[in-house]
Amino acid sequence: MATAALRLGQVLFRFRSFTPLPVLAVLVWLLWRSRGTPGPGGPEVDAWLNGVGLAAAAAGQALRFYTLGQVPEGTSGQGSALEARTLNTQGPYAWVRNPLYLGNLGICLGLMFVAHDAWVYALGLAFFFGEYFFIIRAEEDFLSQQFAGAYAAYQARVPRWVPRRPSGPTEPLRSGFDWRRALYKEHNPFAAWGSGALVLLAWERAARGELSSAWLAVLAGMEIAVLVVFLGVKAAKHRWLT
Image 1 (cartoon, rainbow, N blue to C red):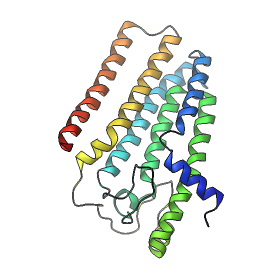
Image 2: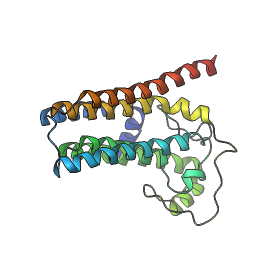
Image 3: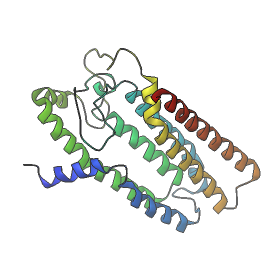
Image 4: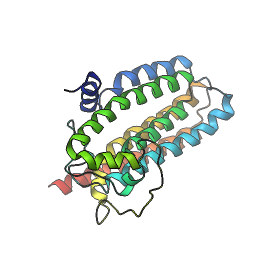
């Protein structure tokens, strides 16, 4: 019989696209209350973390893109139900058991660095690791039932969160990289966090009275680039499916 923790993990997995929304609402309120005040370390650290944050989010997105371009259909699903037709143990899964969630962590940390607010760090990290604590255990229970000893052996050699170089040779998850699948799966998340980061940067400068016309033009140009990518993939996706 499933424990309460496993049942909670199953519920959180099912609704994981919606559970961040109330937390995001609180984070927006916290940032609005701060009026753009530089976080710990002052303006110099704040400016440095803007660049670090964008790089971390881009790295997290790259890991997700790389993973989803390799995984076979019927695994690492983004739907509401746990599924696993096969057990992924090669490619990025030979380094870490949860490459997609590690990518999510990179994106979340990146946005937190851009926001650079102590309360945002505390609430954001508590929510992220609290939710995934239960989701991952529900997934692990499911995979243990599906693949029994094979999954136990995989758990013993591959870490859950911190990547580790495989002890033996690795192979790709599939014969070729599926660019269409990766673009199809990731254009929405990319547009969401990319636009969110740019809004944070614009709001921060506006709240401090530092949003010059030059900076506004740069940020607007970056947002247009994000939207061009997003709409381009949307149009291509429509052609692929028809």
